[in-house]
Image (cartoon, rainbow over all chains, first blue to last red; front, side, top):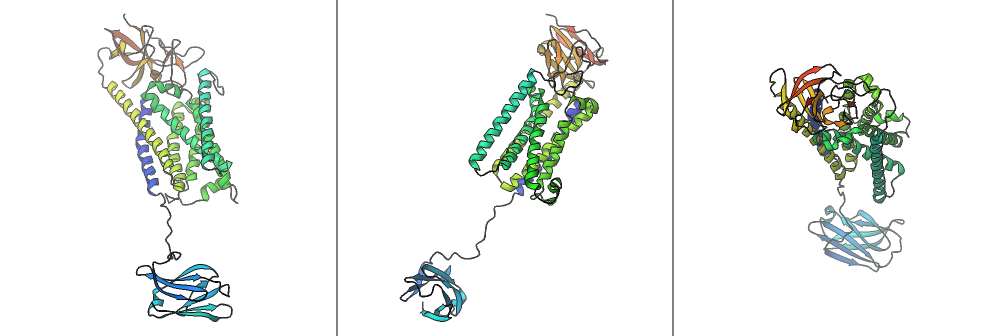
Length: 139
Length: 347
């Protein structure tokens, strides 16, 4: 190889290696970060640690659960199926969810609806729009 | 070497070289396929072909680019240079399979022309992260195609070695494009450290080898240029014993690139640049009484720089003398093919 050609090779590699290495590092720097999903709702499946009050009926055991940091929840333990397949739940006259026919269900209740005890829970037949059961909680 | 153009000048070495090359390629493809089927059992045949050919072509190009500096740093790697052209053309073919399958898989099912789709389906040309990396692969493939298409001696002769070499040095650009093709493509999509290591290790090895070889060469050249001339234009270059039998010492004196060969108790000097592809004659050896270029086997007689008949290539020759066991060379060249008496090494 002629010296002129060797010199061209040397120049190409001196400049090229810098350019390629900068590009290589740049491509690593812009690597997309792993996508993490922010939880929008608090996980309500788990029972809160403290039972603040409990109400019983023939079909239901209802616990008002909570602690000082994570908030408050209503826990329905269905002992015997209700006559209706579903029932609407109203806490302090505000709709909080639909109760199914079996198992244990929990519903978060927000701080605005816990301003002043006693609290009023009404279970409503959604078809006839009549109250099925009413409870008062006074933790 | 040839007097007429033929498609491929086959010989035993070339066949052996190609057989080894194809064997290693087949082994790689088989191993890669098995690993893919183990780790990705639901992989489609098209995706498997795309991945296998893409990685193979990149590894082959990387290897090809290592051969030059390796051979300059250690002569034991010179046999790899001999048929590098076949390796290059094969790399293009493997790369072309990768490109064609990619174009079919990702660009042929829409309403626009698949080739147009390569350029227009992703237009984030201003973003590094979302850059249309397939375009980089496309241009690299175009360069490899031009090199493969002009790899025959017909093009070397008709383009002239200077232009031919300049065209083929675009391979460095192709390599750079492919590094970015991988780094902005599969690395961004999969963020796998394996891919980063794969490209990074190769890049580091390649850059180190080329810079090392360039440094060694520059130092050698500098040492020779500093030698003073003593009387009648002769330069004292080395002891005759310093040149191994049938090998050469390479010199750069007064702008002349010279190879001084020792053979059969004699010493002769010829121009160090092969007439074929400007290969370094002095890195070759004397085979059957002829200086043999390490790149592609072109041959010249040491005493007159002429290729043995029927070949017609010729090198410049130089005066050499031996005084007290030391070799002296006059860098004034004689016209190509001029017979000059060899200097006899006294026992």
